[in-house]
Length: 144
Image 1: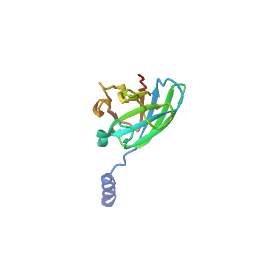
Image 2: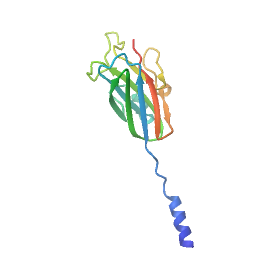
Image 3: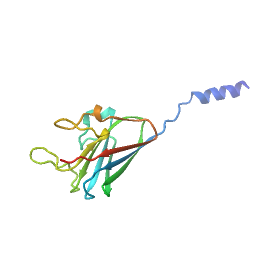
């Protein structure tokens, strides 16, 4: 009896396995189905890199567009805080094209559908908290 009780106590002391989360992102309002939507996921640990397209630290997906919607799934995320930026790379050149004034020529968006003033929003305004293993998010593409 004592051995069995010690066994159950030992099992109770083992760390509980945490489940990896899967982030399902639908990017809506794409003006056409040309090119791809580049989806970039940034963690709180790398929030200073947000939203720069060359520095995402977790997940980068080039999603095809079908009838104005692009869907991306980023698997194996820990429960926690993240921010997402998206661009509509219409010419599929791997860059976020801007005009000579720096105004975007392609669509863009952020988690929470936040927008910045005279530039992109900061991480804290775009942050989402993944609290479940299957987390759904929708981002609306914006164009100038």
